[in-house]
Length: 154
Ligand code: FES
Image (cartoon, rainbow, N blue to C red; front, top):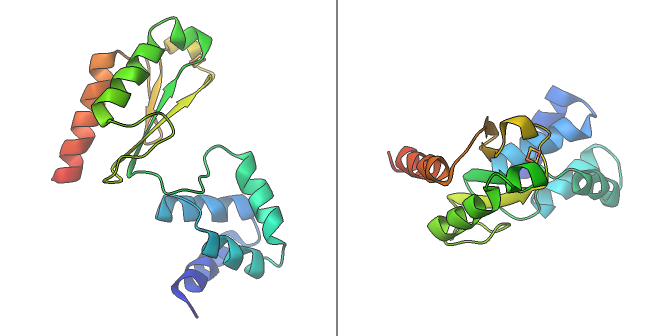
């Protein structure tokens, strides 16, 4: 049995035939959904690969390319944009030297933008590793990066 098969077997034991929680565990462990593991999942759940991909591509939280250890998502929807989120995303781009949708070379950070997270009243919003930060400023966003860098290097 390969390492990937053993991993998927474990996840199937925990989640049964529920595909989304299995994919969430894979995403969390590998930071993306590797093709070889998608094949194993399809095999174990006795479903066509294209159906697994069909579900995975429907959700933004799944990625088919490796993401960074830390994922920063800046909301650039209208309410956040008018409060400066686009400038904040630009500043993070410069700080990390990547464009939205990209991952730093050292695989430490991925930067993403999104068009509304449904909590406009406390915008602008930055989601850092799944944690929502409201009323953000560029300074606060850069501090998040610095803190995560420190945490990473400790
Ligand atoms: S526009 Fe940013 S949360 Fe709605």
